[in-house]
Length: 179
Image (cartoon, rainbow, N blue to C red; front, side, top):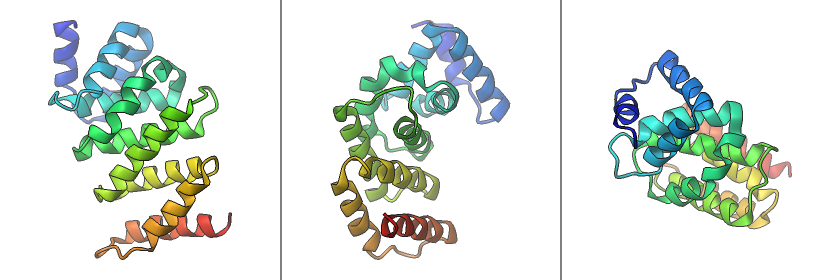
């Protein structure tokens, strides 16, 4: 691990311009991308969420770059607990299940299902739950039991849902009903 690269990851701020700069750096440097994955997939590293911020942007534009790291990423999902880490991870999951560049093996899909369900059961923030629900809905097209699980999960009583959460729940239930 290059200490300079790690210190740059550690100093990343949430500003979009900063994240875009490091995204471009990941496009240009496979070593930097590998470091981002190593840090992002290590929940014990106190800067893992910063690496996930960048990996989310990488996944949005060039998902194929993450193909060699799918084992690492998928195996980490159930270990992520910090809100700034689970939101980009759930969005990466959504990108993975909606893209056509990478064929996900069933064991990666199962890990994504498990991770997304964990995010929902832990009652993460609305954006995280929205991305997780959309990823699960897409995977439910291949695995019908996931749609059954979503129906059961969404039928429970949500304690004081925000307007945004009500919208996400209603949208998902509507999509499930129209299948």
